[in-house]
Length: 409
Image (cartoon, rainbow, N blue to C red; front, side):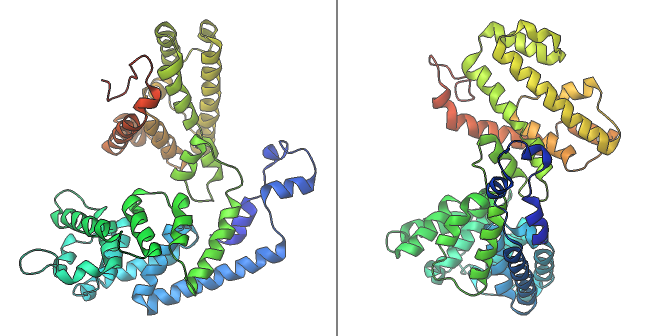
């Protein structure tokens, strides 16, 4: 995406401008907009880096992979998606020629980047790093970067890929044992890899650590860091609360600001969860559930004030989003279809269902049937997060010896 679009994206809409009723100078200060000459300078740097990425992707195979990895770790891959796609496609087509490469770092990086993008890469490519007795070769024990790459790669293991499971255990054990004997910068990088493997982390939150671990970086890495700093200022003006973090994590592309705002409906999941876990009495919660089931605005008068306010806000936001979907696709779900989705109590279900439509899927019979069937990709994700959340927050929510979590049940 052109940086000019990025720059324009930082302009506040008319609805938001009214919230800042001081002066135009104050508004410009708040949104962090910059002078045209600086913007043009960054546009030129952006174009130059794009050209460099294209050239490295063609002429220097490993350097192209390293650049793709750095771009993704810094959370700006949306700016270079076409170039990244071209590099990875080229790398995939070259896989037969690279099958016998003996550089563990390069092999692990190529495998991870391709598999992350959905390319089929067999785990058997790591067989060449094993000795005749079936163990990993002894000479690998001192290849720190290679072992870090191998551990990162093991995070993408699927069922039955025993060599990747073995690689994960092998690399973790060695890297952990080396941490006390490595120099501080290298030890810090190893610790970061073990705690926050890329596949299980959000790059925007870890970009600073990644840059810190690259002390002494120069050349294209310095230029990339400058572009990242500029991009980050466009979208990091406000300190995000918990539900804003959800939106930024799920939709990182700066070209989707409206969808991120709409997705903040996840805040209702947290509020309603707190109502059930910490505030409501059994009688009030029963009544609240019945009101939501019936979607009955008039019945909110029977609820405590805070429950009535919550339900009215939920109803208003739901209607707003439904109308947006209606304007885009010319159809609205009927009340029965909506209630089937609305009765789902887990936050992930709500996030993924909203995303399905916010990202442009039409309300067709096939799509509605797919969502109503609660497919495994939604159900499994929701179940995993519910268990993870309960395991982590059970103590915090414990009241009178009962917290209502999975652990307690």
